[in-house]
Image (cartoon, rainbow, N blue to C red):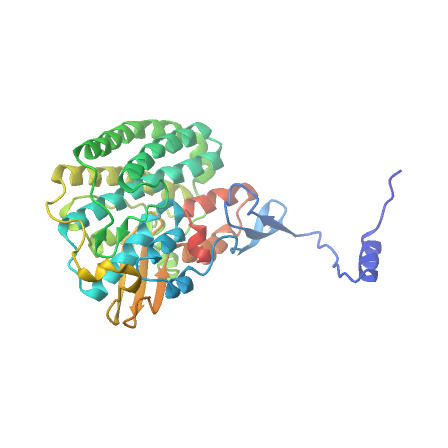
Length: 394
C-alpha cells in the first residue's frame, strides 16, 4: 500500500522533530555536482538549475589537503620541497621549481648551468605528462574513451623516465634550492627521453583524428564557455585559457628563466575564447613542448656540477637563509604559477605564498562561464579550464 504525504505534512512533522524544512521552489532546483561525480574530481559545484540550464553556479572546494602555505612556516627550508609539490599533483615539478628559484634568489646563489638545463628539461617533461593527463580527462568527459586510454599509456612512458631520474613516479622531490637532487643517469637515459618524445610525436595525428578533429568534439565544445580578452584580463586568467582569447602571453617568452631564452618555440593563440579554443591551444602547446625537449637534447647538458657547493648544506635541518624576499614564477600547463617567499634569517621560511592560476580559473571564471550552460556542458567547461583542485584548497 502506498501512503501519499503532502509537502506541508512533511514540513510539519520535521519541525516537530526539531528540524527545519522549506517548501520546494518548483521553477528551479539545487544540484550538487561533485565531488562524487567523476567529472569534477576532488571538486564540487553547487548548481541552481532551471530545467536543464544552469541559472547560477557556486564553486564548492575544500575536499583536499589544506594549509600548505602555513605548514611551510614550520618546516626547514629543504623539507618544504616534499610538502609544496602537492599543490598541483599532475605537474608537481612546478611548485618545486618556483619555491627553489625564489630561495635561490634570496640567498644569491648562482645555480650551475647544468642544473638549470636539467630543471628546464624536467619542467618540459612535466608539461607533456600534464597535457597527456588532461587529454585523458577530456576524452572521458566527451565519451571518446580510446583517446583517453592512449593518453594514459603514453603518459606512463614519461613517468618511467621520471622514475629512473628521481626514483619516484608522481612526487619527484627533485628540484631543490641550489640545483637538483641528483645528476642525470647518463646517455642511455637521454636516449630514452629522445625515443619517448619521438614516439609521442608520432601519435599526435591519431589524437587529431579521433579527438581534436572529431565531429563530437566540435559539437560538444564549440561556442560554450565563451570568454573574451577583456573579461580574461580583468579576472587574472593566464596560460592556455588566456591564449585562447588571443593574448600571446607566456612566462617562458615574456620573462625568460632557466634555458628558455636558448630555445625557439611558438606561442599558440586563438581568438574564439570558447571551450574548443582552449582545448586546441593545449593540443598545439603539447607539440611545442616536444619541440623544446628535442632542442634541449640536441644542445646537451652543460658540463659542471648539478648543484651549488656550500658547506652550510651539510646540516640541512639547521641551514639558514639570509633575511630577504623573492618572487619566482614559471609557465605551467595551468597558467602563470608563482611563489613569494620571505625569510627572516632563520632555518624556516617566515612566509610562503603561492600564486596559483586555479583560484582565478576555478572560482570566479568557472562560476561565470557556467551560467546559461546545459547540465551536459558543465564537465566540458570545467575540463576546458584545466583547474588543479589542490591549488584552490592550498
